[in-house]
Image (cartoon, rainbow, N blue to C red; front, side, top):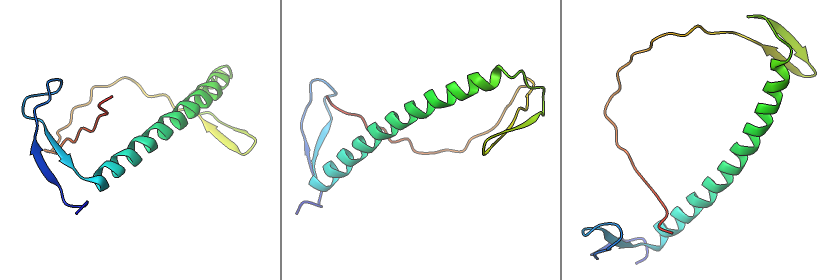
Length: 103
């Protein structure tokens, strides 16, 4: 049955003596879908960052004062400056899942 995980301990010289191989076609497909989505996300994030940096660079040339509001086309732009400060906080326990490509 493809949905059932079958664990077979197989040593892998590259990763570790105790790595196990899981035969699960559904999980493989889910991981492949995740990787493809991650690739698309990175491409979109890169395009957004380029567009953001371009717009921000143009806004920086306006030399706006703190709390100044301007309108440009359908956009409202407000500049708010934040002073440097020290921040401390606590976190709760969590699980960390790492998924990486082998090749």
